[in-house]
Amino acid sequence: DVAEVCYLGGMVMDVVDSITIPVNAYANNALRDFKRYLNKHFADMIGISAMTGAYSNALEYSRVAKEHGLYVVLGGYHPTALPDDVLKSPYVDAVIRGEGELTFKELVNNGPSEGVKGLSFKNNGTIIHNPDRALIEDLDTIPHPLREIRPKRFGNAGSDYLFDTIFTSRGCRIKCSFCSNDMVNKSWRCRSPENVIEELKMIHTTKKRKILKIWDANVLTSVDRMEKIVDLMFENDLTNFKIWTESRSTDIIKAERIM
Image (cartoon, rainbow, N blue to C red; front, side, top):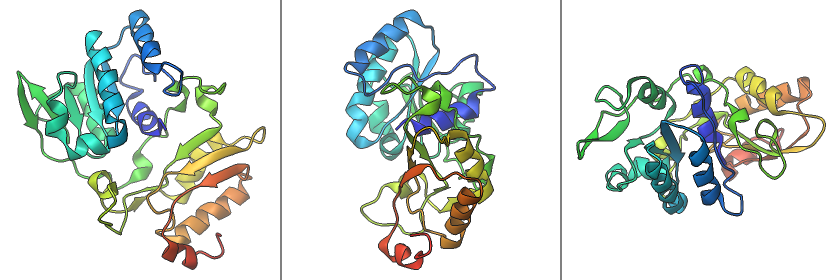
């Protein structure tokens, strides 16, 4: 999903001339479409979020972007885990480690510099790792995602995808050895139920039943909080969703009312 990029877009929309997600990654030949887009549209910078399984594709997009003179920034789980390896690529100029919103906004405003916490970047061939950035403790301060920048996909406009994503919390209290969540999101923090409901109002419609992926690492970390969100969804008639989410089986047992 492109949710991460949409949250970044919401963070910088007031400080850039324009921002867009140029291509539908599910198209028959998305890389070709990306080249055609850059042939017709001017841009300064591209941000790409990549997990390990998609990293080779991210480098292909980076290569095309560099051929068109863009400054290429990678973020997400893989670049956070291996910033030195990622920056060895001639197609990558900088890596945003960990949560990206504040670092990305400072990078857009100030350019690559040693004052931007959470940034690793190249300076005359030398890789510089700035200090880590502190976690965003109050997630309600993050602007709602700029979903309208998404490309048309499967016949749906960017502001009205049939499959949509939201996060109501970040991080996890359980640090499982097999899970990469702690690499980026670390300690558990949550949005207020009221803030979540305001975003759900933006994507809910009675015209079609959307699939809603709640992107939390463990949606039932606080059962009382999730009960409040569910109650508010009913109170505000936000019930036309099919919900996909993840939780630990031990927490599901505690949440019989929600189930």
